[in-house]
Length: 107
Image (tube, rainbow, N blue to C red; front, side, top):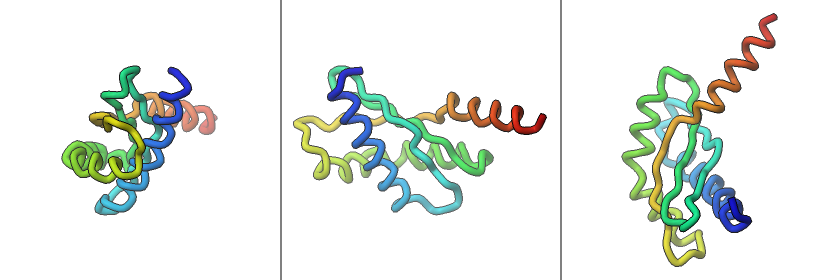
């Protein structure tokens, strides 16, 4: 990733985290682990982890349902000509890391 992509990704991660914290129903904790932005800055993928894990489906549905509201929230705070379109996914890399930590601490 380029330096610009890194900066935009980090700013988006902060803004998306703020949006989800404010708009979620508090039934689960949604953590934005990272945001990847495409080279052309037109698309970005938001990776989340959810606690408790049983609420992942509901949290992911909430995130996908609120994508247009998220764009409206981000637009005035991001000084870019074009705001990227968002996709949301569960961060399985983070989930696997947590499982490895859990297993290594159990021994």
